[in-house]
Image (cartoon, rainbow, N blue to C red):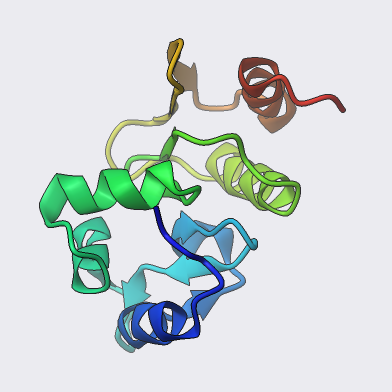
Length: 151
């Protein structure tokens, strides 16, 4: 499991990804609420890869992504309006996640025209496509219900 408090880990992570306040550009929402920027370059067209976490982990490829997500990071694929959650979101991740879904509500996905939410834990899974225009509060209610988070 990842030690999110480890300064060396955080320093290496931030050498690869920058932090953003724009939920549209975030590729990962960390347990402390920081959103990692996936848009790079002056024109904003180069999209970073989720697998780049392998440069700060001992795992490679999908194993690195799964370790990152299993340790509490929420994966956001903004080109597909897709969110993947394995671990119960923290109190600071929940408002960030709501911001992400509000962006999905405002803009059409580059590819699918819908929002995809995939959640897993050791006992169950949830996979849903939400049509463009689905109220973000409806999607957040599904997250809260799945993880047993009270409002």
